[in-house]
Amino acid sequence: MVELPKWSDADLVVMHGPFRIGIFPNSKPWFPRHKARRMLGLGVRSEPGFDRCPNDIALLPSLKGSVTRAADYQGTTVRAGEAEGHTSAVVHGGGDDWTVIFASDAWIAVGPTATKPDAIEIGPHAAY
Image 1: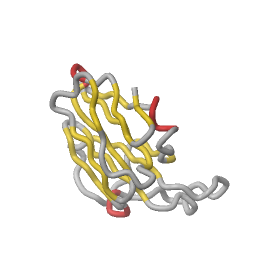
Image 2: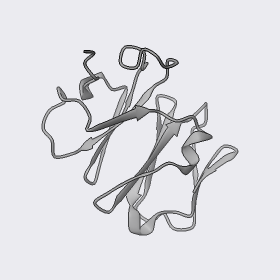
Image 3: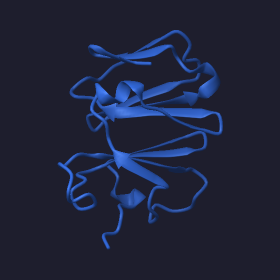
Image 4: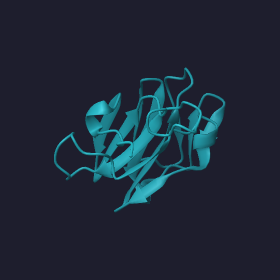
């Protein structure tokens, strides 16, 4: 059995609200039958240590594929995807107390579910 990546393997880790969010490198060691892609990991911030695996891990969606995906947990929403060279976003309608981070050619948006923006525009795409 192949061991899943640990938080210490992540290219980027963001802590916000109850979440620990990570962007992980190449998926090939962990998903050998899939095309090599990066992964998105979600975990509970209160879990100790970076030597553990994320609670949930999935392939990191492309920028276009990320526009309709979100994770909600305890009043916090997370969206993420490949940035595909983009380095900025425009938040439309709402978005109070939301943070959008670009690093390692990926984007992560996180904030309170109650103030979820109507859209997050990244390049030619908008996440709703």
